[in-house]
Length: 165
Image 1 (cartoon, rainbow, N blue to C red):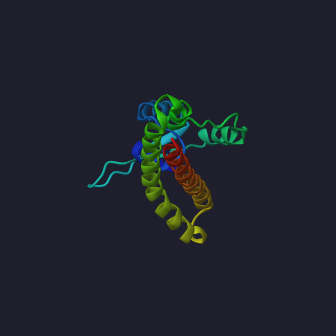
Image 2: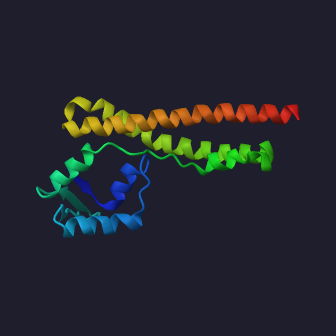
C-alpha cells in the first residue's frame, strides 16, 4: 500500500479519522526509522510529493493491527455537548449551533459525495483496495446524510418550541 504525502493522507482520512498534522510527521518518521515504511520522492515540477510504502518488515505489523478488534469507536461532537446544555441559552442559541453544524456537514458531504460516486463508477476497474476505499466513502456519505436528516428534525422541533413559547 502506498500513501502520498501527509496532506493527501489528511484529505482522505479527515472525514472519518481526526488527523493531526502534528502527529503525521513524527509517526511517518518513526515508522520509516523502524523500517516499517519506506519514503520515496515522487515529486513533479508542479508539486513536491513523497510516497510512503509499507515494507516487508512493516507489512506483518500492519496485518496484526488490522486483525485486532476495535475497542471503541468514539463520537465526540461539541455541537451535541452544547445542545445537551441548550436549556441554558434557549432554542435560538441551539438553533444557531445546529445551523452551523448543518452548514459544515453539507460542505463535507459536497466533498465526499463526488469521491464516492467516482469510486463507485470505477469499482470493477481497480485493485481490491478500491473496494475498501469505496466502502469507507459510502459510510461517510450515509453518515453525513443522516446528520442532515437529524439537523432538519432538530431545527423543526426547536422552531416549534419557539412558536409555542
